[in-house]
Image (tube, one colour):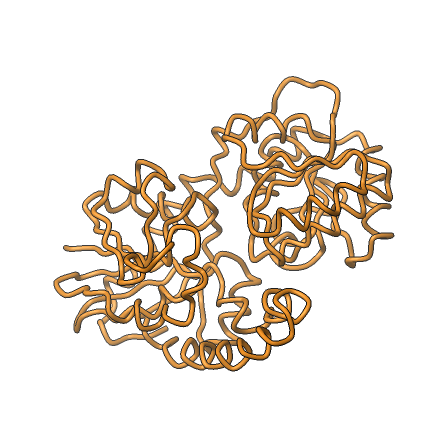
Length: 371
């Protein structure tokens, strides 16, 4: 059986790529198809597979500007040549789920989320305050057309798997499809509690992009008079550095390696998740290290954080509510073992077993079945 793994783009090891790495371990002989691949940006385990790219790969400045080619993504994904493959597994948060598979092949989609910017988060990404009034007006019909294409091609996979109940509801709302839940894999063997010691700062580990709401974390930490370390990089860095300049105690540390991230988790007063996430690996990694999470009480965090036990779920996104939650988290004696126990239910072995079971169900069903 020939297997193709389809991912939107390979430009870094974020949550989707970590899931792809585990899926690829189930199919060591699989080929990987993607719109853009920046060599060396993902794990050796992924790059050990043959990687095929779309015509987007050949466009100018693609390594750092690939997002600017978004209107071309539908045409690019539909031109990927999957002839000869019997099983296609897409790992999709943008267009991968709409790949065209050959007759008789099965297609299982692991849906990270229906694309946010085309559906319900246009203002966060492309509103006038983000890109200017003229660019926002130009992009609005472009994103509306992309959403229609996304909806119209939602029938292509035989089956959807969702990364959370929250994403399953979005799949139902935008695609009118059902989905089973397979929570993403978390490396609970690598992320473990460290030696007890002084808690140094609040910590955020995140891509620096608009929907992560990092400006809320900065304002709340400043209001609570607590230090905050932000780990990660992205297009919002300059904007966030300007905010941090007027908030003493806030540090932007840039991208750190896994060892440094783990050390930051272990020494954190609490790890923050101010944005509405589809699942959120960071809260589970932090809990695997025995540290509490303060998260917005919406989205995937409501499925991974036990309010008052492994962290705090903040009911709204006001600075006042968040500052109060941060002060409470910093002053609470948390049960490290109980926090760690909650994270263990999201381990990698569990993911591989559940994903393999879903693959087997798809292969056993008729090729024309959609469910």
